[in-house]
Structure formats: structure tokens, C-alpha cells
Figure 1: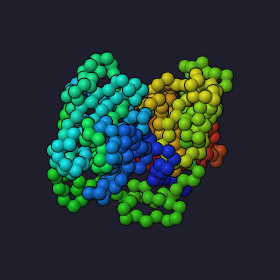
Figure 2 (figure 1 turned 90 degrees about the vertical axis):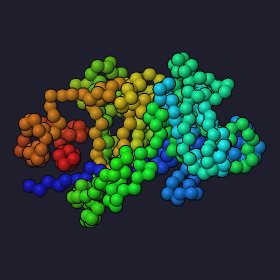
Figure 3 (figure 1 turned 45 degrees about the horizontal axis):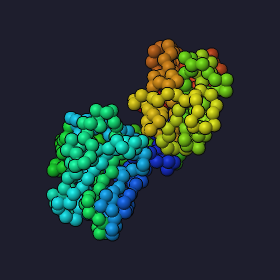
Figure 4 (figure 1 turned 60 degrees about the vertical axis):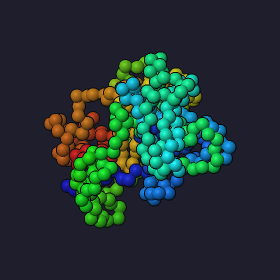
Length: 408
């Protein structure tokens, strides 16, 4: 019996939407929104580093007669996707900056994007002209600004940072650059690989030269309609879909049903997409969707506005992303199953049955593939564990998904 295996992963296309900026920031991510927010007469641009054509950086022009306090917020007014993890024992951030001269005062300010009165500022001077890494210790606050210890004592959090070049002096049209914004590890911002040169075929990892992993597909050429996966040519799947599953057994389900909602139009905004009741508290939705990274939540009941009831509560950090602690997934050209998750939890619903273990021997292997084929041919009775994509049908799609589980 010939069984076709189909590729799980293709190159991910992130053309549909960008993700919120977050630390560390290096301006090299193809999916990150690097919008800057200027004020006081600054102008900023994402550019190729004029001193390193392989590097991207932010160019800052402090225009003629720009305010003494002109600056640039690193990101949109929403700030970073997660809070800056400042503590009294881990209070240092680093920024790589370019300045035309030494002795230039540069200020860094952190604040709460939801409360502009919750701030902390520190300032230091450049020591050379050109590029250098500057460390900003927020326990050495700038004169007239709030102590970090006071803010933390009040329970303040900081999720936004702004940088000010030649702080305290009006602009004259001068140009600056910055890059590589990061939190330091207990004040240690040293790049352990900065002065290490490795042999050909090696790379530096945390100060050590290690062999660069060999790409098993480097010298493999596949037929049309196939691609290389771990050294083997496999068929490219067509019309891939994503399946959402949620366990509502602990919830009082609204009469209008359960929905998957996300900001992307393919997930229908606040109205969401209606899931189907599979029984035993499990609700399911399978849809085609463009490749990309998406955030979503399950919603108990139909509401066509964002500020309504029914949403899952904020999810824990292990599965909550962004300002609203949404669920997140990345979809490529392969079938994807998400869940079943308990409503409002990162935990997966657990069943005594192992999905894909059709012959119930405690393992998922080629024997289970053969059994699914026999179910499709009518030679075996239907088993719930054979419905891998949870669409209520036993088909070639379940075979494809099981084969990929086995080979990965």
C-alpha cells in the first residue's frame, strides 16, 4: 500500500500584518512594526546603517530649532508588547548609538504608556565619536526626575522607552543613529562574541566557536509540486487549514454559541466566527487562512463590539501575548490544529485516548496510518482517535497529519 507523506512546513509568509515592537530591538525583523514616534522637532527614519551596509538602524535628525527636549519614542504610543523588566538589582538598559562627537548627553526615559506620570529617566554622555554601546542605569536617575525605587515601590510598570540626543540643547539639524536596544543581564551588556573569530563552518555562541548546523536540504533538488523536508522530497500540501478547538465543559455556554475572534479580518474582528458543538463540551472551527502570525481569543456568545462580555479572561504569560494577553499562532502552508484548550486557560484538554493511536497500543506509528486507510476503505470501524484534524470525518487529511506527526 502506497502512503503519501506531505510536507508540514513551508517558508512562513508574514505579509499579513506586523507584530508589536518588543525588547530586544535590533530593527532586523521582517514582521515587526518599527514605527517610531517623534516629538519636539525630531524626525526619524529606518535606514541602512551608513557605516555597515548589512545593518539596519534608526536615523534621528534633530531639526533646526527642535526643542531642547526633542526625542523619539521607540515604537508607537502603545509601547512595547511586554513590560520592561526593571528592578533595583537589574536596572540597566543598553543602546548602541552613533554620535558625531564625544561628550554628547543622551537621555533615556521609560514610562507607562497608559499613565504618562509614571516615568523614570537617566542620562549619560558619549565617550567617542561614531558608534558605541551606552549603558543607562535607572538607579542613577536624571536630576528632577522620579527615583526608580519610588516608582517600583508604588507598583509602577514601564512598557515604553524614549531616547533624547543632545538633551538640553536646541536642534541644529544634526544627525544621530541608534540600534540594539536591550535590557542588560544584571548590568552585563558585554557581547561575549564581539572579539571572537571562528573557523570556516563555525559560528560564535555565547563566547564559544561551535559548528554551524548542516542544512540537510542544501544539495537536494525536488520535483515540481514537492519540497525538501529534512533531506527528503515530500509533496506540498494544497488548501491548508487551521482548526481551533476549545473545551467548554466548565462553562455555561451562551445560547448564541462559542466563537473564535481576532483583529485580523480573516477572524472577523469582535463578531468572530461561530464554532460547531462536537459534544462533551468540545467546540470546533476549521477554516482556510493566509500564512502569517495571528492573535485570537475564544468568546462565549455573539457580540459585535470589542468592549462586550464573553471574552476569555487575560491568559497567563505562557500563552498570552500582547496588550490583551491573546492567544497567538503562526500559520504556514500546512494543516494546523490548535487545542483543545480549556476556555480561559493555557492547559490542553486531556483524554484517555491518544489522538492518532488508532490501534490503541499506546504508540503512534505506521500501523496507525494503515488502520486509518482501512477505516477509509470500510474495512475497520470508525475510531475517534483517527480524526486527527477534528473535522468529524476520517479522510486523507487525517492520514497526512498523522504521517507528519510520525516523521517530526
